[in-house]
Length: 201
Image (cartoon, rainbow, N blue to C red):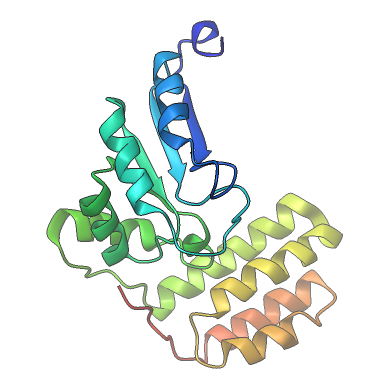
């Protein structure tokens, strides 16, 4: 098995089942634990549900109770408060953040603050945002090159721009730019003249 072939910890991520009539997360969790995995992540929807519908936090709770290894809860955890409430409700050892981190990478720091101090004090300043976004833009260009870099930048910048008043309007303009130089120049100009719209914690 994979566990036997490496000294590194092996983890597994699953969903609650194939569809609503085939919820087998507890069974799979026990099999995985018996196979020697170190931790289990579970997205609280079935494969058929994709990302639609309510997350089955009750199923995650059942999994937590059925195994002794750490269980990591995943699914619609989009704020520090939600992370705290999900951990308390399910008994999970940790949470996994997916879509909520897009354009919002500081959510991990905010969740840590919420879990440790039950408050969130960190919100990136406009200067912080400028530095993070511009650095990320240059790294996308450097890593992917001119053609693919432009395309990936459009996607990532649209997520970041949701943090700003008028960001959606600027995002449409940004998507029309056709060179790396244009992207870098216009994003800097936009960021130096726009207000930040803080997301709720």
